Image (cartoon, rainbow, N blue to C red):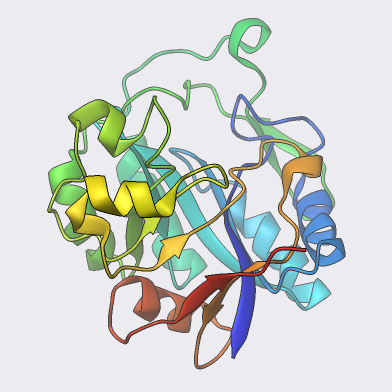
Amino acid sequence: MRVRYDLHIHSCLSPCGDADMTPNNIVHMAQLAGLEMVALTDHNSCKNCPAFLRVARKAGLCAIPGMELCTAEECHVVCLFPSLEAAMAFDRLVEGTLPPVENRPEVFGEQWIMDEEDAVTASFPVLLTTASSISVDEVVELVRSYGGAAFPAHIDRPSYSVTASLGDLPPVGFQTVEVTADGDTAALSARYPEMRGKPLLLDSDAHDLENIQEAGPWLDLPENTPSALIAALNGEFPAAWGRERG
């Protein structure tokens, strides 16, 4: 079945995320956009995933708990998990790898943790946009040890991508990659042989509601579930993919 997705969305927990990026607003905007599977991927944290998954479950939307990890090399890697328990265990690990830099909301933005009613329950005190001590060389196997899948984010961007930080797509086991809507996939495949033959994901990396993408990019999965997605992203079966444009 073709599943329309957006696997890279930030909430108001990310300091660069808009205050309107609440669990309810994200879920309902995704449904209005015609999406069938969405992932919440805040910077270095999964702490809004519990509320996000509860809201999505009530709305009948397939929701994936995740994180956009910033590696020690300042590469952004999207990490997705088959269950909330796995995501929160990974969250605890990553929190211990972050430098003790206090967030300054007036400079960097608020880092709000919310419940399923969109009420603020806490403000996370440690700045979430710093680099963890986890290397890109270890991230694929580390995420898999939690039952998840990892892929490099927006590889065609000039900052915070594996190509910008390392000059290449490292042969560390990525089975899929993310390219922005402006990315020239043919040129990128010619330049980076490691991405050839892999699904090329197109996600919004939305930090505000209007940038959550309309239904178009799709993956052919046996079922619309987190476990099927994780298996596809880990290359356990050849996943067809495509991009319908309206």
